[in-house]
Amino acid sequence: MEPSPPAVAAEAADLLSSLPGHLLDGILGRLDIRDAVRTSALSRAWRHRWESLPELALSFPDGTPPAAVDRVLLRYTGPGVPRFSFAVDPASASHVGHWLVALSRRRVESISIYKRRERPPRPWPTLHSYIFSCVHLVSLNLEFFIIPSFPVGFAGFPVLEELYLGNVEFTYNGERQLQDIIRGSPLLRVLYLADVDNPAYCVIEAPNLHSLTLISDYDEEWRFGELPCLQHASIFVPELEDHGNDFGKFLARFAQVRELAFHSPANEVKIGTTPFTFYNLKSLELSTHFFDMHILLMFSLLRSSPNLEKLKIEVRDWEVEDTEWEFLSAQWTDGMCANLQVVQIISCEQWLPIYFMKLILSKASCLRMLSVDECPTSEDDPLNELLICKKASPQAQILFEVQLEEIRFDRMKMKCADSSKKRA
View 1 (cartoon, helix red, strand yellow):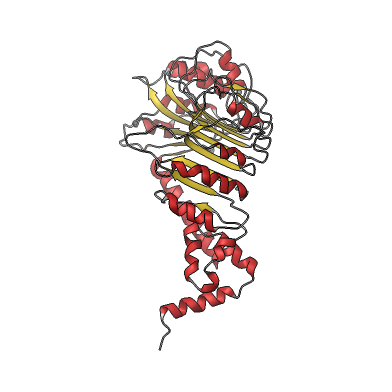
View 2 (view 1 turned 135 degrees about the vertical axis):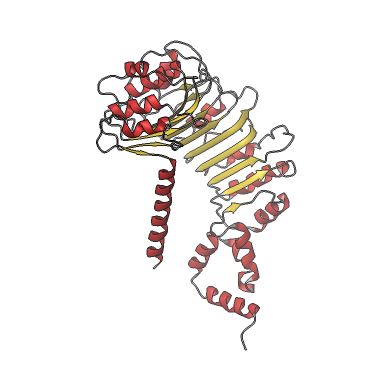
C-alpha cells in the first residue's frame, strides 16, 4: 500500500529538518514571503521557523491586505529584512509609517514603495518621515509620493547605492531636499529621477555616481556639479530651452560617459558644434525627429564621438520627403565614425532614413552590422538599395527584421542548450 500524501509530506519535512540549521535558514531565506509562511504546514518543527530567520525578504504582491503585512512584521522577530516591496493604495497608506518603524529596527537594506495606479487618480500620499530612520538602506525606490521634511538630526543615507524616484514631490520649501539626500549618500552609484517636482535649486553632485537617468520636462531646472565616475547617462528632456551655450554646458556634464541615451528635443535648439568631445563614448542611443535641425544636432554628436562603436537611432517623426543626399553628405567630416561597428535603426510607422543608412554604409570603414526593424516588401522597396549600395567596410552585414528574429531564436536555443549542459 502506497503512503498517503500527508505521510509523504511529513517524511519530506523530516528529511529537511535533519539538515544543519544554517542550510535550513538559507533555504527559507530564498523563498517568497508567502512560501516561507506556508512552510509552517510542513511539520510542527517548521511552524514558527520563518519567524526567527536571520534574514527575511518581504515582497508583497499587488492587492495584499495591509493587515497581512501588519501580522508578518509583528510575528517576525529576526534581525534583518534585506528587501521590502509593497504597492500602496488608500486602504494601506496609513499603515506605511508603522511599517517603516518596524523596518528601520530590522536594518532594512532595500525598500520599494509605490502607489497603485487608480482611476480616477487620487492625490499622492505623503510618505512618513520614518523613511529617514532607515539608515542601512542600500536601495530605495519611491513612486507617486510626497516626500516629507527631514527630521532633526538626519544626515543622509550613509550606505545608499541606488536611488529611484518617480513622480515624487517635495514638501513646501523642500526644494533642496533632493540635493541633500544625494550629498548625504556618499556611496550612491545609480540615480534615477523621473518627473521629480521642485528640482530648481538642486545640484546633482555625487563622487561615486556611475549611472544617471533623468526624465524631466525642461532642462534649465537641472544643475550639475562634479560627477567624476559617471559612465552611463540616459537623458529624456523633451523641451530644451534655446539658451545659447548653456545647452553645451548641459551636455558637457556627460562628456566622460561610455554610454549615452539621449531623447532629442521636440523644439528647436540651435547648436552648431558641440563644444567638447566624448572621448570615452562607446555606445550612443538617440530618439529623434528626422528634421533638418535634429539631423544637425545628431551629426554634431557623432562628430564629437571619435571612439563610438555602437549607434542606435529611433525615428520619432520625419519630413514628408527623405532628406537629400547632398545635405547629409555635407555634414560628414573626415575621421567621423572611424570606429563605428554596429548601427541599429528603428523605424517610425515603417518609415526609414534610407539616405542616412546609405551614407553610413559608404563611409564607416569598420562597420560590421547595420540592422533595421523592417523588411523589403517588394522588388521596388527602397530598402533593397542598401543591399547594392557602396560599402566602405567589406565585412558589413545588413540585417532586416526577419533575419534579426532568426538570430534571436538561435541565441535562445543556444542558451537553452547551455543550460541543459550545465544541469547535466
